[in-house]
Image (cartoon, rainbow, N blue to C red; front, side, top):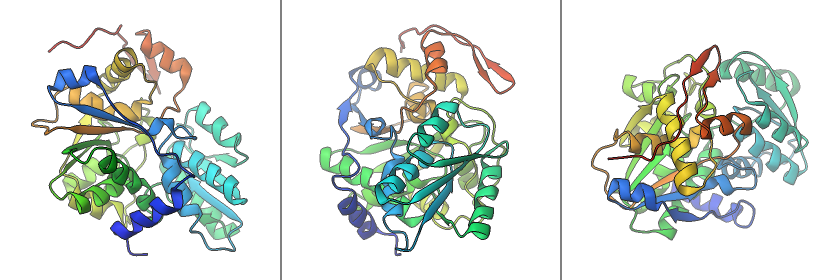
Length: 338
């Protein structure tokens, strides 16, 4: 498969009527802070609660016709997308996950009829177990990010953004394995070469951010984070997302757990939107003024809503949060002041 704008257009045709086209809405509060229009792409409104459904359906529907079992390793949202796509396709899904994955995401995948296998302490462990199942059982694996069909599927978000607002000049994206960022950047820069695309991730375990800075795929340690969906490495043998992100992303940034915490509160209190920590990292970077000279209009993608609601309620109420063996000190929401 040649990964180019035609790949994204083919994915858009396949997904039409299957993965919902999502709204693009302004955040009046954040626009006032920026003195520039900020638009929220609501991928958290997808049937599976996350953008991953796009790449998952595109990949599963392009599997060899004799595929009986599809598998993947996942921090949650990709696995749910694969489970959803496999159910539509009428094949079995086996999802490998680590102990860092929230229980709510495990149960959501099981509710779609997929088998969940918990193994290891981090995403690397689940990746190894997944690949072993491919060797031993003949399962067909779909990478959460480093797969051309997955990347093309995520790229359809970029096409939608420009169709909804052709005047967008900057896009701020959550950055993990790079499937979302690579796909969107590939799509929008083909249509509008001068548009700027930024990637944001959490400080600890920032795999793609560190890899780009080092000029090569780099291993990182995965630790508990409010942005759990951004966990995991990019793979030392990364074929697609690293070179695309290295070439097409204008800059990358990291945010602290406290900044993610405050961004989740801000989105809830000011825009009345429930979102995972992983999908507010762009907002966190904007509030912390880490991205300078943003040209508007600006869009950011709210990638998912599959959050542990007990923990989320604690964040909204300003309570302390346990992350692994550490305690993140909470604070009640105070409206952002310039």
